[in-house]
Amino acid sequence: MVMVETGQPPVPLVLERGYRNPTRPGLGLELLPFADLRRRLPGDEYRRVHRPDFHHLTLVRGGHGTAMVDFVDRPCRPGTLLHIRPGQVQRLPTAADGTPASLDATLVLFTPDFPPRLPATARVTDDPFGPAAWQLGAADHDRLGRAFAELAEEYGAYTADGEDSEISRELLRQLLAGVLLRMARLPGGPHGNDGANESDRSDRPDWSDDGSSQASAAAQEPYRLFQHELERSFTTLRQAHDYAARLGYSLKTLNRACRRATGHTAKQLVDARVTLEAKRLLAHTDLPVAAISHRLGFTEPTNFSKFFTREAGGTPGAFRADQR
Image (cartoon, rainbow, N blue to C red):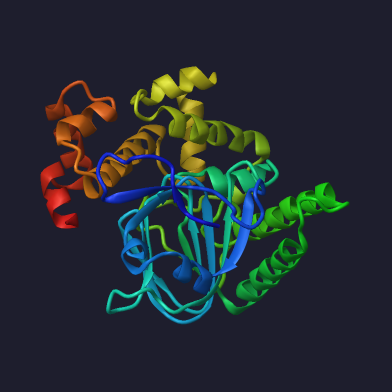
């Protein structure tokens, strides 16, 4: 997949990346070795911060490095699984000296509309606060490694003009769904359980496991709908009762669903999402604070500064200076 710029960002601090598959045009999926990505991007461009509009999975078999996802460093070593979602900012894995890391890893890049829309896979792909990294135990690494290998084998055989191209495309979609379903079962995922894996949630609310894996589909539905609406409306809707009204639930029902899934109220999740976007804009653009305030729906920059200071523990200017 060639990472190409989709337009001019406000300033050249973060590269907005759009999906394009150079070898299989029109296919919303690409698999490639990490070494191929290193060769495609010049050193300076590799080290830049990227914001893709597609999903980016990396399964590491060997080597060491450090990636950055939404202001959190993610160590990469054998057994690491990374998941960057559309809209997240990332810096690709680098070695201790700042050069591109030498990893033995497989990358799976796919557009949001390529995998089948299953409830469990949607909870993996659509959750803006979902896990960004796991350190897999041996059994899970082996299972995911086999799933990646089967997906890679079918991808290598795919040709858009083949007699069975439609069957092959559908098989690729289903094999990708298999990968995502396995991710949904990892600790820290929507149906995770205890085990040897570790998922790092330090970049978002401290989710609690209060039995959501046993909740019925009906009980999970309000939170699933809230996730979609939050991602679409966080710059214009700030109050939890507005989300509840728009979705047709009582505030009590919405808060119960959010607490079951995350341990936090709807209002806390709204504020966390706005804070995350503010951090992205402060760290990776030179937009004035007043412009960021306006983009996030605040009527006055002073209101934004008070909000950010309360949520992030420091002023917008101080956060930007620390990141630079």
